[in-house]
Image (cartoon, rainbow, N blue to C red; front, side, top):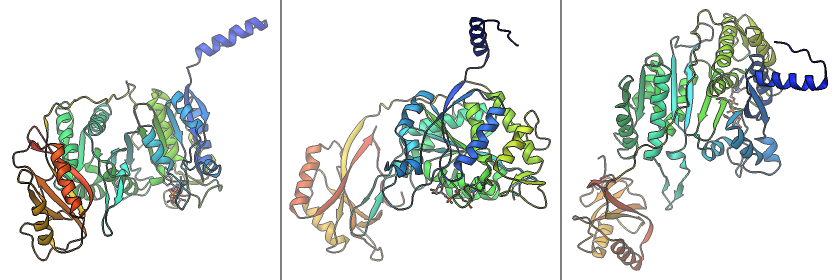
Length: 500
Ligand code: NAD
């Protein structure tokens, strides 16, 4: 539709009408990042714009230029304001300066914004990009905030360090529900859960229990549980057997790199970091300083992250338009240096040329590779659903000692003499192996001892624990930490001992 404006007032009215007819632009915070970041961001934004993506770019700064201004976070404080407004960040890769003192921008963004779900599709593009797995098309959904990444570490004795693995019920519920919803909405058939609950019965056990509970609400989704070691081995050997995989943070970190690598296309994968208040979209690769400024980087990872962002914003048509044109470009053998193969590729191109090739193919789709389909729909809601109503009872305490004045039996007899009959010494373990009573002489012991005092009848008062600690202190023993023992509806909320 065109407008003929005869006067200034007419012109103003015409442009106001034009504005109303244009789709509303979704504001998006955009951080180009470091190294190849600005080049691939430029190509990405050009393609999104040519496809008619209705986005309004708000530039923000992260990475080297911010570190250089002396901000150890690497994040310009104005970024938080921008994201609060836009709720969406398209982010280029960031170089973490070597040496201590600098924080990882990625970890800060993920944790501060509560980006709990990291969604990384890993798909092969056989025969256009070399891979051993022609039919691979899986999605890794990694819990993004908890687990060993809480960053709570201590050196407790001269010999022993620890890192706390925190797994919470609300955290599990959120990520598992997200994974089930994602599987259902994308019409995928199966959701696999990878845990190590045969060893970590309480933490990984919780993740698996929550998975089982929520699975009951999704009878249309086929489920399976695999112990993480054999699970990862199977993904590496037979990725085509998997569809969607949900797993705790550390396992997810490892598996998503394995999956991306074996798809033959690490440089081609984009990822979404989803939270309740904001979401962040980025390529999975880093800032590639070795090729920065040469105009040869592959912009595909960031472009596909941009496609995910459009789908997230509800602009599913534009998302499909770009994704289809990108697949056609790959099929046509127009490849950047990282995936160029003299046998199967046709034209070797630079970053911007690749962007141009995608733009030329807007409106076209793949002939052999599966065409993308983005379904518009409401955002996945994963707010906490269950409140715990179990009865919690204090039944004892694990006292951790730094001690190296003898063997397990010496320590056992000493602690027995300090215990009250209501709160007796039940056992001592060293690195999780029971060494008192009835330990084996072959067991290697460090200077780090867990001494369990547990009331057979339960119902212990905090004051009794304090009295015990005072006697331990008066005897000159160095207690490095204590961990209270609770039961929940009579079931122990603590591991029972070695190998149990
Ligand atoms: P990298 O992913 O930057 O590079 C690994 C190799 O892959 C290099 O040879 C590089 O040239 C190549 N490569 C990566 N992306 C490419 C692309 N789009 N096109 C063509 N080739 C590409 O990993 P790195 O070298 O280990 O890390 C470099 C920096 O990036 C480090 O400071 C690291 O901390 C950071 N990093 C950031 C992120 C992120 O911001 N999400 C992720 C990983 C690494």
